[in-house]
Image (cartoon, rainbow, N blue to C red; front, side, top):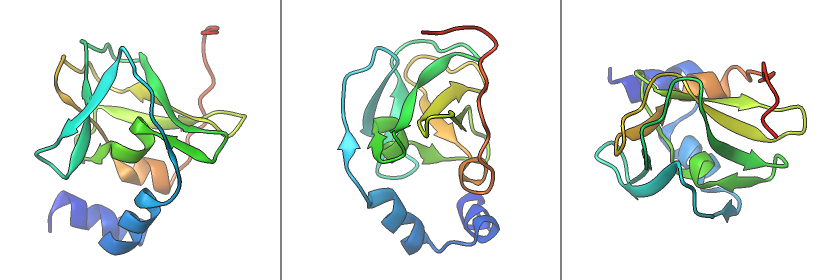
Length: 129
């Protein structure tokens, strides 16, 4: 069983259901100095590092006000060997943090299990804004 099929089984969704959730809603697209979207060798469109990203670095928002997906929230692909993870903020925003160093031009990947089954709350250890 592939990593993707195993993940679908673990989260209890079919590929069609997951695609429907992914395609649902508006996508707020804006330019970022951290990432860009491009064709992925994994699936369709993916998100790639525009610069070297350091473990622990904030990559950007994945969802705004619990309603609007960003490029990160819509186009980040799954991998069992993820290098980033989504965290939830108190205001219903979702933020992506690098879990490993991500070299420039590498695809940014999350493990969908972490995002769907468990909603990790992010509490910053320092003030970012």
